[in-house]
Image (cartoon, rainbow, N blue to C red; front, side, top):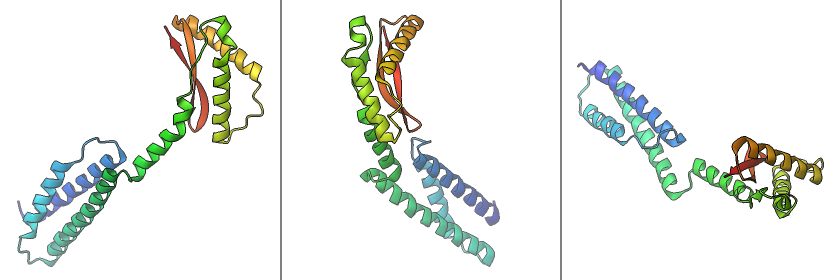
Length: 187
């Protein structure tokens, strides 16, 4: 292989490494591309020892080495942030979990027996939905409590028949940034 082909191969591997790290940092890949990084680093060291007289090739080599060093500093900085728990993506995910945590952890309303249908279960779901709507900035004025409870009763009966469930629990959750009620059939 001549020097021009080796430079082209190094450039290709460096671009591939950048892509792999981008996938890793965005959460698509679960494993850091350490092997590829080591391979590129080995090639960089090898290329650094070459005596090149062609100024264009020398410039390309120096440019690729500088690019690799710049990427390495950037990747190490992000890896350190991930380790410390201050990486923006991870912090964002934690904030989302915290925001939806109290909403999703609401006490499920059970609709197994008729005496429980209008009891505390629906009240807690209604209250959780109202607080979630206020938190999300959605209007709560149009919500009629009796219509809400009647709607849940009808849904409960439909879901019981459809899935052969003995009861249905309702939990307030979030979808596309808006509060929703999720029905969970129980056998």
